[in-house]
Image 1 (cartoon, helix red, strand yellow):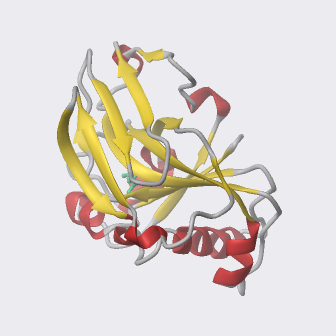
Image 2: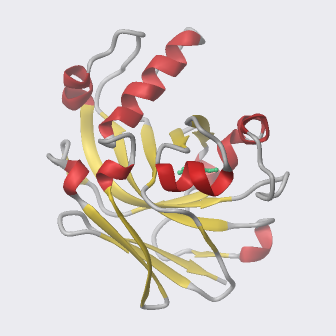
Length: 204
Ligand SMILES: C=C/C=C(\O)C(=O)O
């Protein structure tokens, strides 16, 4: 396990699936699409893609009373990320229970290069997703719970209910800033933003 995803953190995603609260799942190293690796679409069922912000923690975090200040200090790196979501149940009529039972629909993820520390004012960071060079979606960081750092607050509080927490080194995907898009064979998907290195996904 290399970390966690938080999903359904933006109005766009909640409206797309008709679910009114976030959920979370685990990131496994087998889900990471590294470097220039090409993702075979045939490995997935009903893949969709999303642009996100992501974090790597420098220290452990736990507890129901965790503050945003503590979380600010715990972030070691900030990234752009692409998440490929997928569902054994299909996305048509997806329920919260389906999503939770299916690891919050996490299929694969790609990280851009890390920027050290917590990049300030991420709410104002504008993410643009292109598919084969054409702008396909965009959104501000603030689409995620008003500030993407709140995804970490939500996750730490959620894990505390189960008596666990985040560990130093964990990657956390904060959630899509726009509604997800279907992912097609042969596509190249890029998420970019003004202050963060882009994340790129090539699909076979
Ligand atoms: C159903 C999946 C939701 C997400 O992955 C998200 O909102 O980021």
